[in-house]
Image 1 (cartoon, helix red, strand yellow):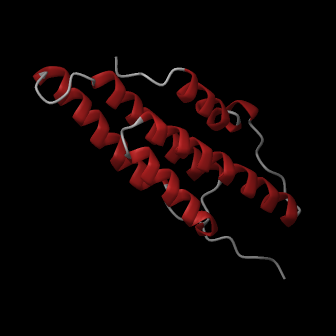
Image 2 (image 1 turned 135 degrees about the vertical axis):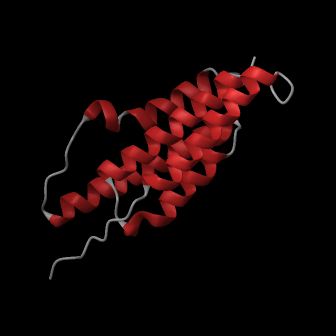
Length: 133
């Protein structure tokens, strides 16, 4: 019998996280008292929104919940090494989802530009790690 895929709104916590980082970035832009690193916070907000929407589009199943939580937790930590780990977990999630879809005998909406972005994010975050200076 076929395995049941139960989708859920995986992107919702990522949307809240991105709004938090964007608000924090705007506050740090205008106050200069908390941190003067608003581009860094805004970039993490953009990453969290992108990672959430990517998971919602390509792998919204509850089966990948542990990987989705790992991506969310590591994206939420505002350290560039955490962004590397979040991108790594999202890459693992992609591989597992691709294997599952092939195992189901179905087709996967292959968009190489989107699917290559988490591995390329790992390279980007590790080659230029000091976004805060």
